Image (cartoon, rainbow, N blue to C red; front, side, top):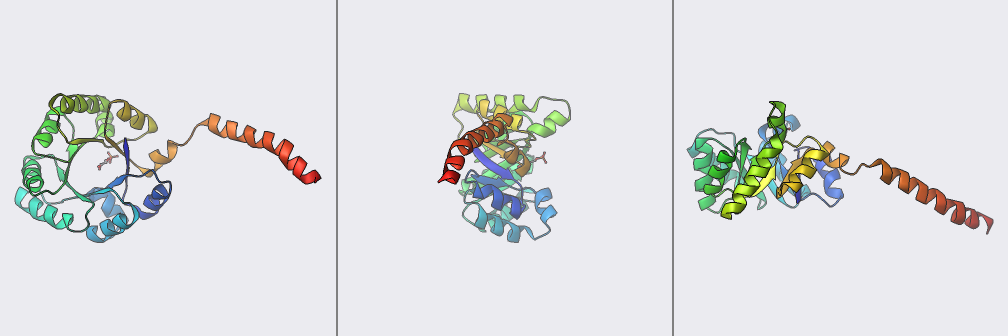
Length: 220
Ligand code: E4P
C-alpha cells in the first residue's frame, strides 16, 4: 500500500519524508488555502520535498476551463497529478486530460457508480472519501470494498486512493479492503507508530542491557 500525506504543510511533509515512508501527497483547495501561498508556489515547494505523485486540484467548475487549468498544473512538475471533482464537467475534463496523457485523480467520490464513471474516463486515481461518509452515518469503508471489487471484476487500471482517513484503523481497514493508496493527515501517519508494548518492551531491553553492560563498563 502506498502512503500519501494529505497536507500542504511543508513542516509536516519534511518530517514525514524524513521517515522514508511517504510515497506521495494529496492537496485540495482547503489545504492549500490554509498555507497562504499561491497554489503554484506551494505545489513547487511540495515537489522539492516529496518525490512521488503530488495531487493539485483545479478550482474551475466548467470542463473547458478545468482542462486549461489541468494542462497548466501538469506543467509545474513531472510528478503532478491533476485533481478533478466528480461532476459531469469533471469527468469530461478527466477524459480529455487522460487522452492527452495527463494523469488525473478524480476526487469527491461517494458512490461505486461514481467510481465506475471515473474509471471509464481513464482516471489514474479515484479518491473515495471514507471519513465524510462516516460523518453522515454511513460506513465509509464499504465504499472502498465495493470499488476495489468492481475494479478487479473489470481489470480497471485506476488506482483506489482511500481518502478522508481519520484514524489508524481507517488506514488498516483500507489496506485490508485492497486500496492501492491511503492518504492521511500527518497526525494519523504519526499515530501508526504507537503501541504501548513497543515502548514497554524497549524500556525493558534497555534496562536489562544497562544492568550488565553499563555497570560492567563503569567497573573497567
Ligand atoms: C484527499 O484527497 C482529500 O482532499 C482529503 O482526504 C479530504 O479529507 P477530509 O474529509 O478530512 O477533509
